[in-house]
Image (cartoon, rainbow, N blue to C red; front, side, top):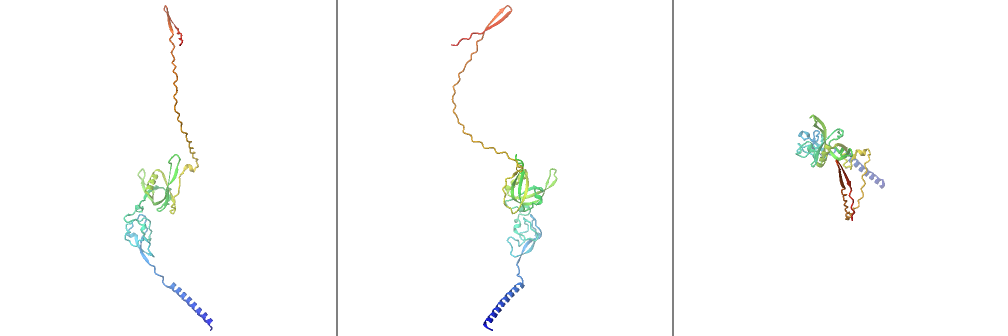
Length: 293
């Protein structure tokens, strides 16, 4: 065997050894047991917890969380009992601090109101309430309609991008004292918006308009009037009057007094009475006019 053949054989043996080792490592890595994943015990909801629910010990259970625990996730029951739920927590879901009200705030609707905000109740019907599509967490616009002046009925967007805090029913008594079921929607507003909304609900008709929760841009609208819907031409605005020239003050000139003409009354006539027996007659003669010198 010459040197050339020996070199080829050695190279082939080396390549086969490398390929055999690579195949061995691949087979071993696939057949070796999987690495154990670390799990952490966390607190979970034992049942569905609706908004405003005050958590009890029976509402909680322990479960395992695979991987790293996110910040704010409860790993102990201590401090969870007695706190209110501000967002619906479903059965088996891990309890997050952001889904609960502050300690001592209690439950109910009040615990879901952030600091500085107010919950303003608005009575609605099936049409105003969008036939049940207005649910907690949705975003709506508030429209008002009425007849503020001589221009006819008008509608205007009063508030935009308002969060619905709750939607339910309330019992109100009618004139005869009988209870009536009235749909009520609680909107999350600022104190200034609560004043505007309260005034509008008493003096005008309210309409809720559903919007995309991701759409946070406020539209610029000027309102609509009934006259605009029928293309009724508006009376032209009066043209501005031309500026008046300043008035020139002319000094008054004293006028000469007109001569006073004195008209003298004519002198009385001469009167002669003639008595002839029982008959009596009178005769008058005008006096001659004296010439003026």
